[in-house]
Image 1 (tube, rainbow, N blue to C red):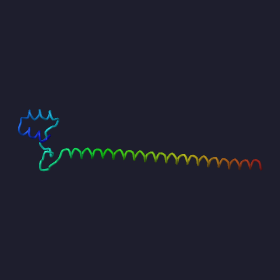
Image 2: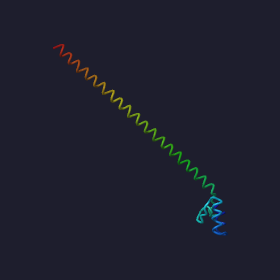
Image 3: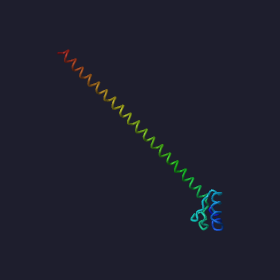
Image 4: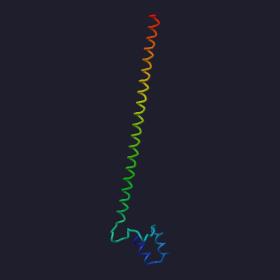
Length: 112
Protein backbone atom coordinates (compact mmCIF):
# COMPACT_ATOMS: atom_id res chain seq x y z
CA UNK A 1 0.00 0.00 0.00
CA UNK A 2 2.83 2.37 0.85
CA UNK A 3 4.34 1.77 -2.57
CA UNK A 4 1.05 2.62 -4.28
CA UNK A 5 0.60 5.72 -2.15
CA UNK A 6 4.22 6.73 -2.79
CA UNK A 7 3.56 6.58 -6.55
CA UNK A 8 0.44 8.75 -6.13
CA UNK A 9 2.31 11.20 -3.87
CA UNK A 10 5.13 11.58 -6.39
CA UNK A 11 2.96 11.78 -9.52
CA UNK A 12 -0.39 13.26 -8.45
CA UNK A 13 -1.76 16.17 -6.45
CA UNK A 14 -2.23 16.23 -2.70
CA UNK A 15 -5.99 16.02 -3.20
CA UNK A 16 -5.55 12.82 -5.23
CA UNK A 17 -3.23 11.42 -2.54
CA UNK A 18 -5.80 12.19 0.16
CA UNK A 19 -8.50 10.52 -1.94
CA UNK A 20 -6.34 7.39 -2.43
CA UNK A 21 -5.49 7.25 1.28
CA UNK A 22 -9.19 7.31 2.11
CA UNK A 23 -9.97 4.73 -0.56
CA UNK A 24 -7.24 2.31 0.51
CA UNK A 25 -7.60 2.89 4.25
CA UNK A 26 -3.88 3.60 4.67
CA UNK A 27 -2.03 6.82 5.37
CA UNK A 28 1.05 7.56 3.28
CA UNK A 29 4.28 7.75 5.25
CA UNK A 30 7.26 8.88 3.15
CA UNK A 31 9.65 7.57 5.82
CA UNK A 32 8.19 4.05 5.98
CA UNK A 33 10.96 1.46 5.88
CA UNK A 34 8.49 -1.00 4.32
CA UNK A 35 8.90 0.76 0.97
CA UNK A 36 12.70 0.60 0.92
CA UNK A 37 13.43 -1.81 -1.93
CA UNK A 38 16.99 -2.29 -0.72
CA UNK A 39 15.74 -3.85 2.52
CA UNK A 40 13.46 -6.23 0.62
CA UNK A 41 10.93 -6.28 3.46
CA UNK A 42 7.79 -8.34 3.02
CA UNK A 43 5.09 -6.50 4.94
CA UNK A 44 3.11 -9.70 5.58
CA UNK A 45 6.16 -11.26 7.25
CA UNK A 46 6.42 -8.26 9.55
CA UNK A 47 2.72 -8.38 10.39
CA UNK A 48 2.79 -12.17 10.92
CA UNK A 49 5.84 -11.85 13.20
CA UNK A 50 4.08 -9.12 15.18
CA UNK A 51 0.97 -11.29 15.55
CA UNK A 52 3.03 -14.29 16.68
CA UNK A 53 4.94 -12.20 19.24
CA UNK A 54 1.65 -10.75 20.54
CA UNK A 55 0.15 -14.24 20.93
CA UNK A 56 3.26 -15.53 22.70
CA UNK A 57 3.24 -12.53 25.05
CA UNK A 58 -0.41 -13.13 25.92
CA UNK A 59 0.18 -16.85 26.54
CA UNK A 60 3.14 -16.06 28.78
CA UNK A 61 1.03 -13.51 30.68
CA UNK A 62 -1.73 -16.08 31.23
CA UNK A 63 0.78 -18.69 32.40
CA UNK A 64 2.31 -16.20 34.85
CA UNK A 65 -1.10 -15.20 36.21
CA UNK A 66 -2.13 -18.85 36.61
CA UNK A 67 1.18 -19.59 38.33
CA UNK A 68 0.71 -16.70 40.75
CA UNK A 69 -2.84 -17.81 41.52
CA UNK A 70 -1.66 -21.38 42.20
CA UNK A 71 1.08 -20.13 44.52
CA UNK A 72 -1.36 -17.90 46.41
CA UNK A 73 -3.84 -20.77 46.80
CA UNK A 74 -1.10 -23.11 48.08
CA UNK A 75 0.12 -20.50 50.57
CA UNK A 76 -3.42 -19.88 51.84
CA UNK A 77 -4.05 -23.62 52.24
CA UNK A 78 -0.75 -24.08 54.13
CA UNK A 79 -1.53 -21.14 56.43
CA UNK A 80 -5.03 -22.47 57.15
CA UNK A 81 -3.66 -25.95 57.91
CA UNK A 82 -0.99 -24.53 60.22
CA UNK A 83 -3.54 -22.38 62.05
CA UNK A 84 -5.90 -25.34 62.48
CA UNK A 85 -3.07 -27.55 63.79
CA UNK A 86 -1.92 -24.86 66.22
CA UNK A 87 -5.47 -24.33 67.49
CA UNK A 88 -6.04 -28.07 67.92
CA UNK A 89 -2.72 -28.50 69.75
CA UNK A 90 -3.54 -25.52 72.00
CA UNK A 91 -6.95 -26.97 72.83
CA UNK A 92 -5.42 -30.38 73.62
CA UNK A 93 -2.78 -28.77 75.85
CA UNK A 94 -5.40 -26.71 77.68
CA UNK A 95 -7.59 -29.78 78.21
CA UNK A 96 -4.62 -31.80 79.51
CA UNK A 97 -3.60 -29.01 81.88
CA UNK A 98 -7.17 -28.75 83.16
CA UNK A 99 -7.28 -32.52 83.64
CA UNK A 100 -4.04 -32.46 85.60
CA UNK A 101 -5.25 -29.52 87.71
CA UNK A 102 -8.57 -31.27 88.36
CA UNK A 103 -6.84 -34.55 89.28
CA UNK A 104 -4.49 -32.77 91.67
CA UNK A 105 -7.35 -30.83 93.22
CA UNK A 106 -9.52 -33.91 93.52
CA UNK A 107 -6.69 -35.90 95.09
CA UNK A 108 -5.96 -33.09 97.52
CA UNK A 109 -9.61 -32.76 98.49
CA UNK A 110 -10.34 -36.46 98.85
CA UNK A 111 -7.10 -37.52 100.36
CA UNK A 112 -7.07 -34.56 102.63
